[in-house]
Amino acid sequence: MEIVIVADYEKVSMLAAQIISEELKKRPNLVLGLATGETPLGTYRELTRLHREEGLDFSGVTTFNLDEYVGFSLDHPSSYNYFMWDTLFNHINVNPSRVNIPKGDASHLDTYCSQYEEKIKQSGGIDIQLLGIGSDGHIAFNEPGSSLASRTRVTALDRQTIADNSRFFSKEEDVPRFAITMGVGTILEAKRILLIASGKKKAGVCAQFIEGPITSQITATALQLHPAVTVVLDVEASSKLKRQDFYRWAMKAREEQFGR
Ligand code: F6R
Image (cartoon, rainbow, N blue to C red; front, side):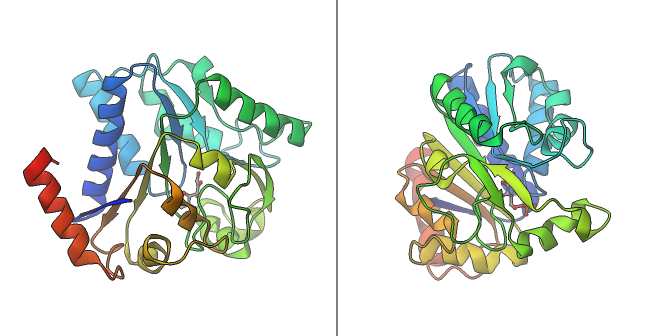
């Protein structure tokens, strides 16, 4: 894993958007995996700015989101579909027919999940997948104990995740108990993975997933098995890493040798 430590949330967002925009410029038909939550908001703001001010072109992009709450219709204000249109898609020139977000109110959920997987395959697979990390170490909604080979499916949310995500709802009881999520195995098939994290509250879990043993109890540790992962952290989120000195030294050496 390539570990990049930057000063603060703003810099995490700038760098993540820059990495995505470089991929997009190389490949105008990019298949882009996206996440929701608080962490990617700055990245989406910067991608919007790059589109508006620098003409970054999303017209050929296909997107796949990681997850959606079960039972929520597309227009539910707390749905991830609503979130994605509100924070990104309405502000860039993405083709709506190329946007894919799991449908929380699909009638046959198991069939629907297999179809979602099939659609990812038919698109040629995800070129770059943006991820955040939950305080329990989840990626997408792969809660502790999820198989590291899991595929897109319906899963129960952990109590910790329900408590964490209650900030997006008027009360905790309104947070759905189930979600559709890409599996860990699905995520590991992306060609490149970009995980972003910021703030002290993520420091413990970042140290565990980057430097701890691989375990289904912290599903983000499965990323250690992927050959092309970039982790962008701010100083606070990196504060419990044991090998900080090495990551900083390697960053500096990369900059000197390759310009980044
Ligand atoms: C969201 C998702 C989750 C979040 C994680 C962190 O689509 O898949 O895994 O990335 O819960 O959320 P924030 O960024 O709100 O801390």
